[in-house]
Image (cartoon, rainbow, N blue to C red; front, side):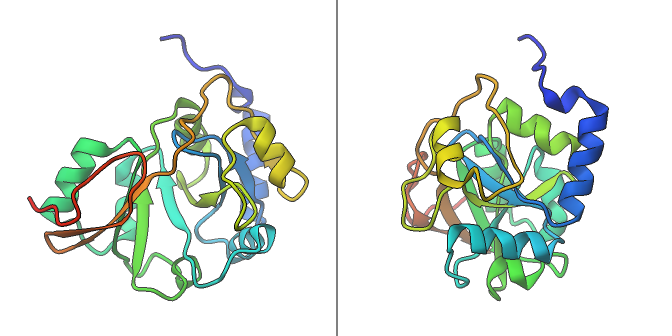
Length: 207
């Protein structure tokens, strides 16, 4: 497959992007499921901006996404055998795994809950985006106003939230499937499906 060439290949732009994110910037991007909004996990300013942009209820947490599962491990307390097996099977992909958070995950991301969702989307542009961002992890949610349909194309994302965010990245031909990720809660070796999405899983899956 030909190497994906994007604006992210320009080192001057990447430098500006990282400065923007450190200053609380919010960006919109394609994933394998639907379009997303993101900021740095340690940027309360960025997280606050995401909630304001969407009109999102503060009781609804954000999730953490990266191009590599290892980048997400510091944000969770531990990886159970079941969680590890699910990651091997479905990362990268359309599965969000909710687990006990570590002290590295700010409460303003998790809405005060002791858990955090993590995911590794299977989209080449998103992977490249995370690979050039300092820390390689984004605090994310879908790129749409609350109670509005998820954005499934670049044009929908631009129309929905384009004037409210700092950058809406093109998808460079790597579009999304248009269906949200499946969300599961993993406690010890038990799995509970919180939202059935692109991946169908039984509700009480065990290793």
